[in-house]
Length: 316
Image (cartoon, rainbow, N blue to C red; front, side, top):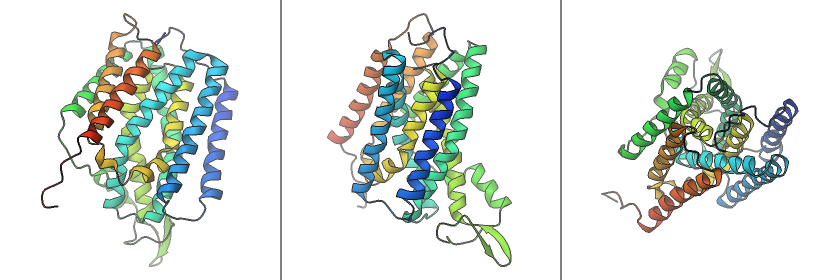
């Protein structure tokens, strides 16, 4: 059952703590040992890291299948696919952000690392609050569903708009509150300059990336709630998807503009999962059917992008 009346969830306190420790250990190993030296990952390195993160997520998915049954396992798979698909589209915003702030390629990995570390906290808060709202106020499911349908409709009919995440209100407030240096100083977030402690543009990039991720969460988390009402499944599928976001960014950075029809596939995915929430328990779509529809929509949009490439811009 997609929206079960039993919303207690499978995550015991020990499982929550164990998963959190596991993720923090992975991040510490990543930044503190394997990627201690700042550098721009090559295409091959990014591909290997992407495969590793997907493999870790798949191994955890197997654990969920074995420990909690095929339904929870399917919910995790569908949630992971939805979150990863939405993340791929959002990578374009990170690309624009790094270009607009002129973040050196060697330190983009560092920015994404700290942004993801912050996302562990903010996503957890969003999911716990969302789960509490759905449990206490069942009608909130229709609010979430309507929001997803509207968001999908806007994405479907919106024209090509160049995003400017560096100009968001958080970034503007940061510039007003913190004295900043004009230039980057290696991988430092703060330096002493002119007798004062100043923030570097690298810290602004982290703040802007984190603020952007919060905006991403407003549609991705409700979308996963349309698949599972289990907080542990929603959280773990979210976290595993964004853990691989950094390596996926470097893998796809040069070819993201080729998937120009992906936004339409994502729009239909949001409309589909939002529609399921609006239907409530009057008509429940099995999780495996939902996963098949989601994968089908994404596959169609990717294949269409490859078969019909975007025409070259005038003047090139």
